Length: 357
Image (cartoon, rainbow, N blue to C red; front, side, top):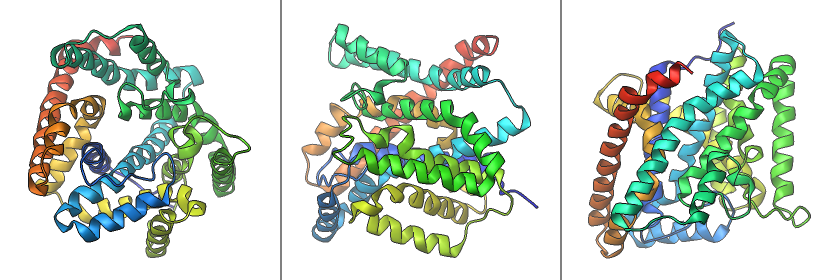
């Protein structure tokens, strides 16, 4: 029996599609027409805003779709993390704390360099020296606990909420691995049921959480263990019926809260199908997307705070859809160049020293 297999090139393609969706989402959801998106909270009005914007502003369709759906790019990173961790852990099992240490050494360099770049950006662009409270919030993010603290998940730089989530998933990986490895599909559905139970409970007045459950591990364990299942279980495949069900869940889940939590795993399934079918052969398009997949760690770390003031404020000053897109592409080119510089700096000056730790 053969296991589902994702090559390194396909991994970079998935990451590339994910980071492109995320970067353009984080730009366009600040630009008119603003629809809102069902990401951390559910609001049917956001879906109605989307429909109205699509019907009334035909020239804004690309902007609007990226604004509303682009945040789902995060799910590809969650899936590929679960998949990749199983592959590496199966080959070489490690002690729990050694495993966590190695994961930390992978995510912290780009994060710390992103913080340094943000400090320089604040000093140069805003001519502002951060105060003590700013450093306290940065400390919470470096401790990876910011998503667990009320009103801190999106502080300083919104996209950085993901670091807290992925660290939590790393902490849970080995227990989840043993559950899935021992009980197979039964274990998968047990974990799935527990995760969705926590999600629905978190949205009830009974629990009354003041943090985003969808910014924390219980909210995204389903996509994570989906990636793990694709790596662990033989004869896992992408089916046409799975696509139809996923389309229905994504559409209905943006209209009805009862189905909202299932949109994330459904969109993951659809994106997998889309990427594998679109990039069957190596072309300039696949090379372009794979390049951004390889750069994704750095692009993610720095793209958020470069949106303002110049690019977003300039785009808000125009009603021309093409001008908004042109400004967005200029923003994209800017953060790409800075990300490449950060990556090169790390590779030449820091990477070798970290490997010796």
